[in-house]
Image (cartoon, rainbow, N blue to C red; front, side, top):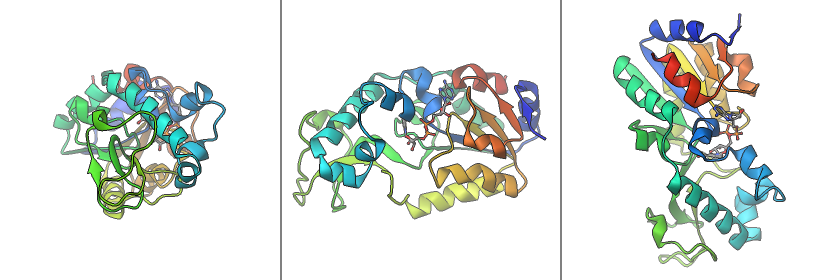
Length: 244
Ligand code: NAD
């Protein structure tokens, strides 16, 4: 049975757990001022198709457009600070035998708050080479905002170090996340629409292995169907309450 709007039921699940896995999405950073994927697409960039902004084909079709979109997002991320949800998750690590944060976010805010998160979709501050020659630049300050630069090693385009639509996740990282999901007692799912796979399959995997699934989201999501408890509220409001 699913319990909705019940912080106490969610707390009860967590109080009995030894191993907690957390899956986060763009919603956990919304209150840090970083638009969710959908919000970003309804704002300044509304007239562009996400496939054009977040896929290799889109990048190849118009490298400056995609480069500028990521430069805009990098600026937002550079100004953002972790919010109460990121901090609550970082301090909860100490209270459980295992507490693993798996994120789809590329903003680095879990790390800034003190969680050693698994970044399934890479990092927006990292820049890599489209030809995968091995070049990596970790300092966004060294990147030009307008035209995408060429790789100093092989001459192909440089690209954001994130996983685009249609690309594979790093196999060892995904297997690690799947192992965490299948071994946890509770999976806490915060701020994700559950539309992007394979991350969206992790709550159902956890549930199949006997875990309880707690979803925190102000709106309905695809993952509600895998939930044991749904807390309808925002991450920065509700996540700290779960660990009080
Ligand atoms: P999404 O935009 O598809 O969904 C965001 C979810 O967050 C929605 O379900 C929404 O109801 C919920 N939400 C909105 N405000 C919230 C709040 N204050 N508290 C809690 N929940 C809130 O994002 P997604 O599910 O992460 O998937 C989209 C993809 O876009 C991912 O691959 C991710 O890597 C990428 N992305 C990352 C960032 C980031 O790093 N911050 C931002 C945008 C998109």
